[in-house]
Length: 235
Image 1 (cartoon, helix red, strand yellow):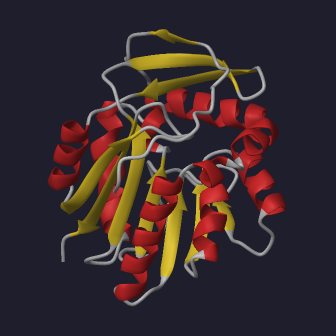
Image 2: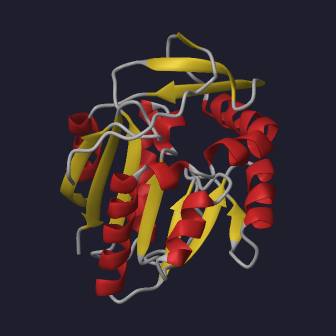
């Protein structure tokens, strides 16, 4: 990737530092409820972001090229939210579909992207078949998953990807976990935002059976300090 800074989106939500001991059922329920609450506002505030992020469009295009070069097939956008990345992948001629924990987000995704498949589901318990997808993307969707759950989630990603299939992750870079209590139009939220470093994420990927091909740090409309990792499932 080339070095390029683009316009930042000012996240209006307030955050504060917190400890990270979380019950799995609690954080999933809180994440689902929070995004149900903000779904409509989230769609309005984020639908334009790829227009302002040329480097991120470039990496999405590279991901699409890798899927096509590997024979094509279905691509899962896990944690798809309101479907803006799924929709963009469809414009890149990928057979992309979206999965999200929040019924509210899925409802808006189906409204905004008619004809695209969106289904309810959790990355902690993916119901996709073994080796059933040609590519998988988790675009700023691992940010609410606690560290103790990451290995399990990546295990699901590895299971559902075809051997050699590409995996694209994006995340916020940092060392803190914080509780977000308000956001996306001022609506109440209760979600932990976990910021991570490349080296820790790459270690998790290696342990899960992925080979990391490239990684990048950038400043963009998506994140004040964002990380992107492109990996493949080992054959």
